[in-house]
Length: 96
Image 1 (cartoon, rainbow, N blue to C red):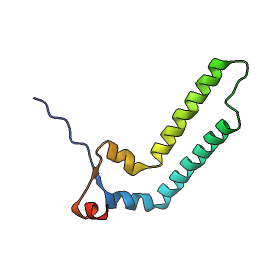
Image 2: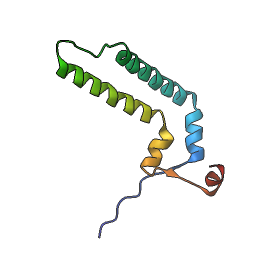
Image 3: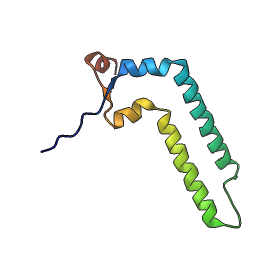
Image 4: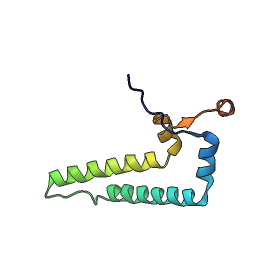
C-alpha cells in the first residue's frame, strides 16, 4: 500500500513574516492593480462585441476566471489552508 507524500507546510508566523516583506507587498499590490484593470474592462463594456455574441461570452468568462484567480492569489492564507499547507500550532489556535 503506497502512502501519499507529505506536503511541505508553513506556520502562521512564517506566513505573516512572508506577507510583511516589502517584496511580497509589492507583488500583492500588482495583483490588486491587475484585478482593478480587469474589473474596469468589464465595467466599461470593453468585453462586449455587439457583432459576435460568442466572442463576448468567451471574453466575459475569461475575465470572470481571471478575477477569481487574482482574488485567490491575493489571499495566500486561504489558498494554503485549502491545500493543507499551513501547520497550525497551539499559539495560532489561541489567536483565532
